[in-house]
Length: 346
Image 1 (cartoon, one colour):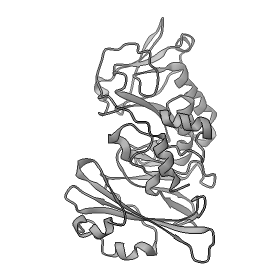
Image 2 (cartoon, rainbow, N blue to C red):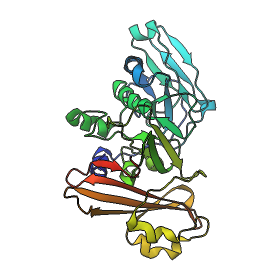
Image 3 (spheres, rainbow, N blue to C red):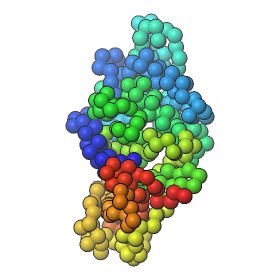
Image 4 (cartoon, rainbow, N blue to C red):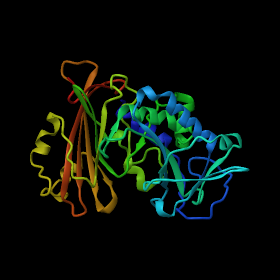
């Protein structure tokens, strides 16, 4: 993964737009299909289902569902109505409590180029496919599922507008353009685990300004190494949420040893660490929380083309008290910035 270039790619893929507030409206046809539309082409979404079926080997036990998200407010499932509509068809669709649904295969809908219609105003919602293996913990995703989800996203035409432009030039779901996944809540840290190795994602892979027009969701995106073949499909991606109790492990990084020695979650206050902040940057989160990240890069002794990169992340609550911290480390190629060894790779 290119740790630093992700900042530039993420910025390039972000499209400036004004998101409209969610609004319930009568069920109606809206002739503006697209990601931020309340209507979607059934044929196009069905191409996503076909892509999913063709990639079963990568996600043998997974289930594909499509999910609706609100641009400014969460979608209220109890008032959400979905239906397939065409010249001779009006088929209501059931959805779960998270506003997700399975897309049925219907010959009439396909023949008549039906639309998936909702009782939400265009611009107030958007859609994403989700490929998830049942039985995994709620904070854990399988890497093969995420790889398939990326492919399904493009096949169904539900990628972000800026990303669509970049991928026409540079390819999709590959190393050139990072594909960011949306988590359920704000993210503090993400780890990727496989037998004999573990990677801690750096903050550029969990950006606060990438591939989204929606400020309230900027801290929910992450980019796992779906393009790196050395990571198997069965690798597990674990998400540590800002509002969760789980504490991620840390790598060993001499550059931050003195900094973390005196940190005590629940006691250390950010007012006492202003000198530390001067070396990094701050990001505001919801409910008054704040995230600090410090990124250090240095030549690796004895290696002409390899650098050591380490990052310290600290999470403070609304009262300015430290709640979590994590040290992330890796070795990167000096020129390409590609990660060549994870902090705990064997």
